[in-house]
Image (cartoon, rainbow, N blue to C red):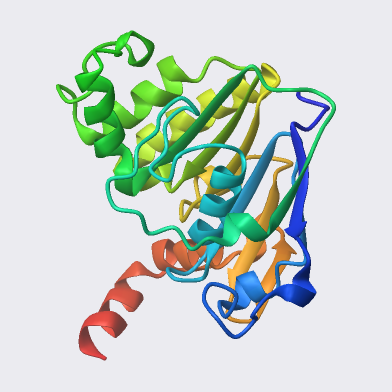
Length: 240
């Protein structure tokens, strides 16, 4: 497994100079972003929609030199800029080792990146034409073909196009890449991906950011409760 981080932590730079009542600092998780320490293998960001996890992951990506819509660091693509500008206020602490591979996978803009790669006729690294595959197969082509190992990989909701079975396959590939000296930071809603052992999980909420264990995440507890009591829960949802 990977015993040395490519990135060790990130923190707010010069907090006394910032307007904490303005966006994005008004988001509780961003407001609480004193310091995040990354696991050398996998760090997860979890939380409800709008909790700030994708905002902070995007800021990390921009701070590392990725484009707003994702891809490798050689991709310069900004179809519609919506960046919060948070990256300008971040300090990213890097490790002694430099990754040989980089990728930022962002579910909401992956189609744009795939189109860009198609226009450049740069598809070999993806195992062929991306648009001739289903959305889920295209996502998996990134994980199985594009990510080579010895890399730093940021994934924003990679489960968006993946079935439960494909999420399990992705989990296996993630483990193989970690064994090849890779480091991941992943924003996710998937209780399957979150089950990866020995990962660091940060819960984003309206009270800020805190580290949490897998069984204490809302994703685990609510999914488990629904599956065990699905008839009762369906009745409650429909009737009430």
